[in-house]
Amino acid sequence: MRAPLPVSIQRGSGTPLSVQLATQVRELLSSGGLDADVRLPSSRALAAELSVARAVVEQAYDQLLAEGWVTTKRGAGTFVADVGATRLGHPRRGTRPARRNRPTEVIRLDTGTPWVDPGQEAGWRRAWRDMAAAPVPRGYPDSSGLPELRWEIARYVARTRGVVCEPDDVMITSGTTHALGLVLSAIDPGAVAMEDPGYRAAVATVTQSGRRCHDVPVDAEGIDVGALARLPADVRAIYVTPAHQHPLGMTMSAPRRIALLAEARRREALVFEDDYDSEFRYDVAPLPALAQLGREQVVYVGTASKMVQPGLRIGWMVCDPDLLATIADQRTARHDQPPWPVQRALLSMLREGHVDKLVRSARRVYAERGRQVTELLAPFGQIRGSVAGMYVTLALPAEAASRVRADCRAAGFDVPSLADYGRTSKLSGLVIGFGGVTDVELERALETLEASLRRHSG
Image (cartoon, rainbow, N blue to C red; front, top):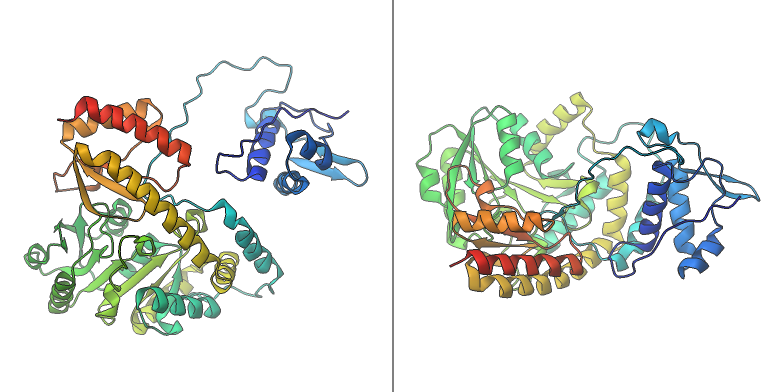
């Protein structure tokens, strides 16, 4: 017997059609909404019913087959697999489900989830097909990363950020905090100076390594080097986000960069440059990376999370080869090799220009969304820093920020509080991310923000 599928397609949602279809069918199967061994509609029939291309249904069925939700029988079709929905905590069809209050989905306007152009899906698929066709290595990958990928990264950072380096100066990591942890494990004991307010995951990485954090305030030009100079002599590393300070958004000025490097030399400390979203400067060209001014002192770190997809968990760092050799030895001892399939896929994305296409399309979207968000928020408070990347920071009194955030939460939107990024700083406001949402979600969120700000500001 063929089972009807109560599914629908929303073409304007921003989610690929095949993903929408696979998600809805998966929910039906996991809830016991379809019995085992029931035949699903053919790809041709379901495509006609939904008015989509047959390839959309085939991709959804292929995904469900790979996950084990369905099976195929030659010449007979696609059938529901016996996944034992009751073992998942879901009742079989025909039993009375337990009544429960399902949590309302909250849409996060965070600073780290990027917008990914659905029109670039073909490049994503090509990269993974290329990975699947490549010879599988016999042993563990090089602890520093695939030599071919390190070569491509060296070319990329030289072209986009002015960081001229050799492949031996590059190490592949699992992202920014992983790189920070690797560096901290390889340098002398001591404290780390951190921007305040600043990137919370970096602070957590430092404290969990057993090192002390020294908070350093930031001003309109970046980290306050005068305050940095007054810290105790135990500072061994200085963490900064000079291209786009996180979360206030200013760019570190050229004089401040020179002063920072001079202070680092005086202390014999490393500067950890987190260059997390410099690709998305859309008012003027970004200043060259800090590493361009002081390669011997700076550990330069980049990530594919904002350009491609956070779930890849892959990034890179560029620094002194002796330090990299020490870190590579430690990684080898721990079997901390970066996953080969992800490296190979990123290599293909870089070679084929897929990363550049993603950056160009996202930059256009961020420029328009940044303008839209800034124009709406500007009458209610001070916009902190320059508008770049995928978020806007609005300074507000603490009480107003708290009330607006509560209104947004009640409407289904989670807007980060600026106060949560600080430790000793007393800044307050909201940090509105606009990358990981659809146009419709952003429009609804801005309507909620504007209405709440009118009630609580002034």
